[in-house]
Image (cartoon, rainbow, N blue to C red; front, side, top):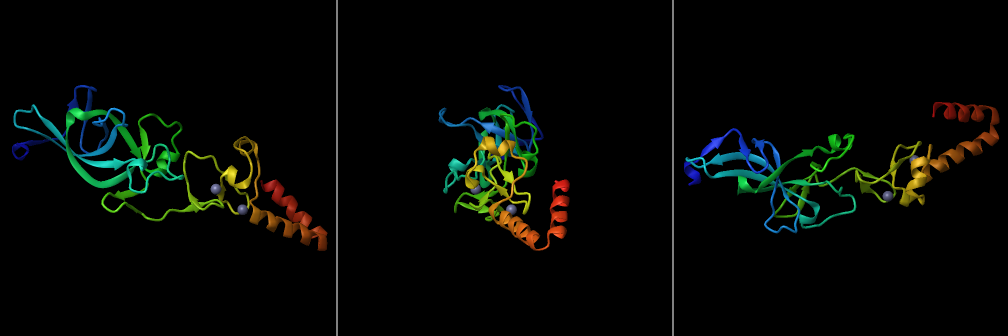
Length: 213
Ligand SMILES: [Zn+2]
Ligand SMILES: [Zn+2]
C-alpha cells in the first residue's frame, strides 16, 4: 500500500492539532507507557491514496540510556544523539513537537524548555560508536563538558573546572570572583618569588594584573 502512496509536504496531527513537515523533530509515543517518548527527525510524510493512513519516515535520536555504552557522567539531561537508525511509523504515534538544538545554541538558551534537546554526537546504532568519537575535555578529570554541570574558569589558563574536582562546594564556586587552578597558582607563586629579587618591577606587574581583572 505504501508503494501507491503520495508524499505530503505537511500534515496536521489532529490529536495535538499541530502541523508537521519533513525536517521537524517530534516526540513519538513509546509502546511502553513507562518509557519516555521517542525522539525522531521527520524525513518524509506519506499517505495512502485515500488519505486515511499517514505514515512518517523517521530518523531516530537515541537517548544516552538507549546507547550500547549507556549514560556517561558528561551526558546532559537533555542530550540525544542523531542515529543512523531509520524507520516508518504511523503519524498517529506523534504526541508532540520538539527542538533538537546544536550544542552551541543549546548552551546559549536563556531557559531550557521541556521540549528542548541537543545533539552534539551522531550515533552508529550497529556498533555503538559516536561521531565525532573525540570531544574537547576540561578540568583535572579530563571530561567533555556537561552543560548541566556548574564549572568555574581559571583566570590563568582559561580551562574550566568542576567545583568538586578543586575541593570547593557549588555555593563557594558561585560567589567566587577569581580562581587560579593549581598549575596557574604555582606560576603566580613563581612571580611572587621573583618579586623578592626585583621588588619594584614585579609589584608593578601584580598591580596591572589586578586592575585588568
Ligand atoms: Zn572535573
Ligand atoms: Zn589555570
